[in-house]
Length: 238
Length: 228
Image (cartoon, rainbow over the protein chains, first blue to last red):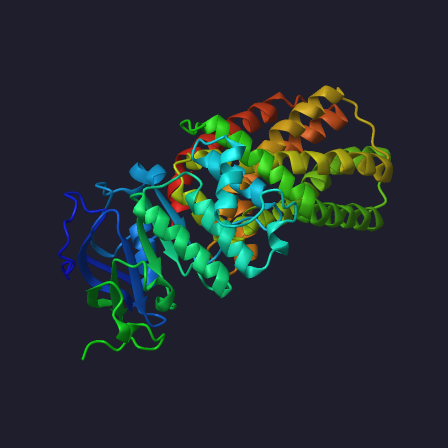
């Protein structure tokens, strides 16, 4: 499905998908998705559980190889070539429970060649937490872990960000703070993909939304239309 | 500041992280020590050898006990990377995959070396052991044999992490491929303890085994890490 968003689109899309399919055994999680996603925008992926949203995000991030089709991210067909330029926040926090927040970030930043602890502390402050917290991440609440996970995804200042359910288990005030942070990053030029069931949180900041159903992209619209704001209002085919 | 992540910088960083995680959780060390202690005590009840017999069987008993205890540690190695899907964060980064393998192997080497340092005095006491050959040769054999066990073990533990019965799969894959190394380490140790034969052939065999399996594991680790 081609982009229905008619605003001026930068020449190089952030992500290009061509007939992307992904099967797990006989189960088809993605069925031939074709789309270009403009850079510098906030793209929201909606759909019921099992629709293929997380799989699509993992395929775009290079964690899963497509069974069929082509994926191009930031102009590269091998995500590893552009690994320093994108960040990923998964469904799981991707953090070591036995380390503190700053220890986790210092380690993951080092994987990107960053050895500046102040930059890690700044990333933690950005998500609204105190970098001096000495407690281990395993002792944090789910919401705090989500925020540290976001800090881990942005510590290397990526130009493309994939976020899989970033607001799950996060209280409404913190979720709004995270939304404002994402909007500020988008305004600064970062391309952001958000998979969420809480469309209302993204209503004011989303540039476009895509609806997935049974592995197919069944709708793609500018912003988030009112009918999609209800968590269960995903039957948009009609 | 940002710099290209190199093999050695990431290996050092990942090793420091693994040692810190182990220091805080003590998952591997505790289970290895407990298991090894059980083996030593049970063997000592099972046999009542003379000093001469001890020299002949101690090599085999010691290395079999170390091998089994190592498997316990190896199962822990990758389990903590699967928790919270942390391995995905590494796979997404530009860090060289081989750095993760090297850091895990070195960390396991240190854990097993600590275990051996604690087990050997127990063996000496329980089996009334005295080496006829020079002790420095035993140290060289221990260094080479430990690397042989952990380099293979770390690689095959990574290979089996996504299998459903990984705790059974690991010994099933690891033990057959470790037979040449096990044979070499047992015969080298027995040769030194009894002073009957020269251990150099077995020591050279262990060195070659270490070089070959280190090289192969480093070459093949990237596809193993990225396997779905």
